[in-house]
Amino acid sequence: MPTAERQKMPLPLSELTAISILDGRNRRDVAELTSYVSEYNLIRTRIEIEAQYLMALSDIGVVRSFTPRERQKLSSFGQRLKLSDAKKIKKIEDETQHDVTAMTKAFRTMLAGTSLEDVVEMVHFGLTSEDINNLSYRFILKRVTHDVLIPALDSVIDKLTDQAEEHKEIPMLARTHGQAAVPTTVGKELVVFASRLNKEVRELEKKPLSGKLTGAVGNLNALQATYPKIDWISFSENFIRSFGFEPNLTTTQINPYEDMIAFFQNYQRINGIITDFDQDMWRYISDGWFVQQAKAGEHGSSTMPQKVNPIRFENSEGNLGKANALFEYFVRKLPISRLQRDLSDSTVIRDLGVPLGYSLLAYKNVLRGLSVVQPNKEYLAQVLNADWTILSEGAQTIMRRFGIEDPYSLMLKLTRGRHIGEKEWKELVAKLSVDDEGKKELSKLTPFTYLGLAVELTERAIKEIRRLRKK
Image (cartoon, rainbow, N blue to C red; front, side):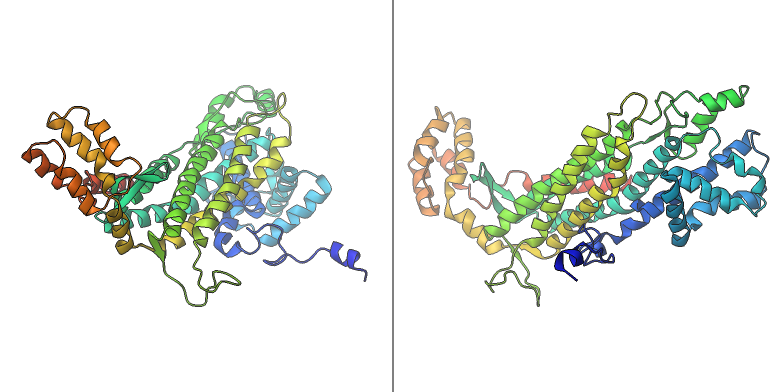
């Protein structure tokens, strides 16, 4: 067979032949998402909602009363759907070219031959596909967020918090604009990220979603025309609330996406915080301030045997970039739907699992990275001790207390652009025009003690993080 023809032949799907790394080399890290964001689960969720709708119609007398056994059967239809059943629905879709129609046809077939056969024609009664889809995608987003993504993020927060507590008293040099600033502690810098993440994750945890059941263009036309004496507005509100969503009665064919967009933007902020952390850790490791444990059997380079690369943080950064690029497109695209509805949002929202997959992959990698790094205490101390000009801020501020005129300009003249060791610093302090009490105060300053309230602030932040986690 000619090479070109052979290359065009489709290969069976596997980790080696998948187009995306999420279904390929990284599938093991994100496989748990398949129970939530796969098309198989989308079909199951649609059936779950159709079944709940039938029971809701029964509750208001549009459909006959169901026995407890029939209700139990209806409630379990979606989650009991086998993969082989979903494949049959996909075959129906090949004919109908409409996924929700294929699902409703299959659902009617499931009811045929059972005690529920007499209500087959009431499946999808008075609904449009979007009445089912808008709830299905929101169910998926809510469930995967709470069951998978938030626990993964909480693991990162816990690891950061524990390490912040462990290293809260280790002094290190803080840098602003990449230049030496003043001392801080390792724990304080770690807890900053834990605190930022925790606030965003707790916000994600309580973020609401809406739902709509308003028919083809948002006016409940078919339902009102068929049963004009029923309060369909109350029915719609109650049905949506039964899923834990906020009813939206003011819609076109679609439920506007602002609530889901709020989720995506929350994820964007979370991913931005972790990207910030990834880049800081990359720099700390590069500078030797943090060290990585070399794992037996791993190679850092194909040609340089000595290398231990910060691959977990680099991997996390790259995947977060991809996730946020997709979230950004979702945020820009999904608010827009021509007139009462066009289908361009459909192909976009079907990829809901992709940015979530890249995000989960990143969260797992940053957690792995954290598990193999430790602060290099000895080297951090060397860096601090190498340049005592980092005490200039403290010195000029203390001098103000003792009435020295323009101490900032004085210290600027003595220290800017210079690197001064302990001996030179003490000599500099001794020559200052400050009384003995002032010199005594200045002499107490060292790079290892000029830490402000870093330890106390770290402890307070840790306490607050853990308090919010318990709510």
